[in-house]
Image (cartoon, rainbow, N blue to C red; front, side, top):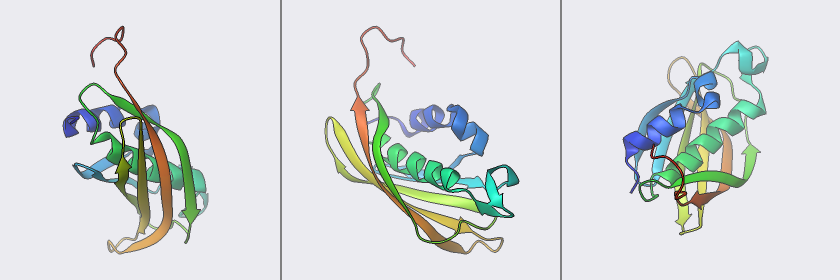
Length: 145
């Protein structure tokens, strides 16, 4: 299995993760919880996130959960995802919980639930995602990470 520390470093090194201020709350085999603050730069009306930021949270969580099951040196990438918005994403933070639905050698089906978190810490479900990640074997010519 991929080291959880390696997975965290890989995800948090991505420019989009850095731009969002993404952080890991927890990670275990087949499950991940991520969070980032709701900032004005990602809203389309005061305090309400655009769907793009909600999708990013959902995708990062689901595919990171899939990444927890990969052999050392492997990587993965989203090849398909469907997001369903069920409520406005308003509050102080967005929290996404990703999980593996079915893990295969080539493809992993993963899902996530995204919650808007208010100042008191209460969560409101705002989106769900069902996705597929392509599992990528290490390239023989690639330098080690």
